[in-house]
Length: 386
Ligand code: FES
Image (tube, rainbow, N blue to C red; front, side, top):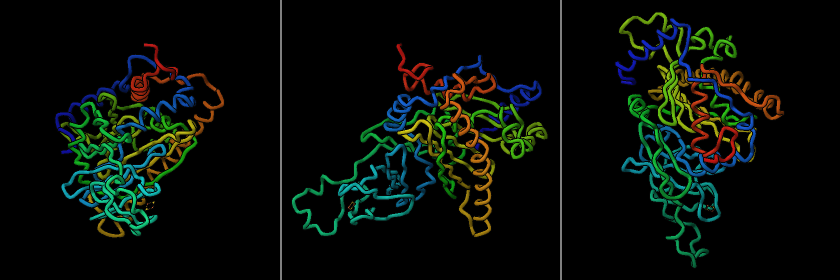
């Protein structure tokens, strides 16, 4: 069951009341966000260090490596890990750097039953990360191979989400703030990864996350694409610790009868702190991950991955999902992230000193308040005095 029926009924009642009142979930007050939050290089350095260099950060879904032997690489802010599922079903994570001359051992995703082989000179590593073999052993006769295993990283897997920490040694589990109780119901581990796409944008990474977090813009920025499908400025917001859930409402909700299931009529969006957005649709799941360019507050990389409940059985199904992803990618790229780039250009030019988050944008405010709390910064992005 993707979502508990009692919870669906409670959300349905809430959304109906909001819709009938021509309102949406409101924060207690508006929130002024300094433009510097998106442009300040020292804040970016703090974000990279506190959020991405240590983690835990969402590397992907269990579906990225569903079976023993499956592996995938994960890059964030210049760091790279390889995650490899062992015969016992557990994921192991390693620094993705060969101990010979530092090559990335694995890139993308794939399957390896016995060893991972570095593509440069074919040093190989076993499932524990130990150096298993090297061609031309005589050339390294005076080094101890036991000292040359892949460096281990912490990895946790829960509710179909995979988190990794880039600092060798224990990093701690991701704090889902209670959202895991809902996410478990989606059975994300049973999904099939269809395709991942990566894009670079000339905008701060946080603006791309902001763009998912309110329904206020739907009827304006997406007048031709999403307006016919969704209610505008109507959503239900709930915080789960650092994370949150935002329920977007389809127009078909208006025809929902008492006792009918809510899920076909909404989009469930989970913002997974700090940089991921998981969107549960009725027939698929989208995962967005946004990563700062560690050297430039005005640039980021966004990855979108589409997962389906079952693997495609033929070209027709594959084409269906490709077209689906084309559509999603087109709307976000040419409308949402294109808007982010224009905003970033203005912020960079000093056009406005601060942004005003409305009471009807509680998700955006929650994200930024949480960031400042975790980073230990005040609302101007400087270290907090308290
Ligand atoms: S760098 Fe990996 S085998 Fe040489």
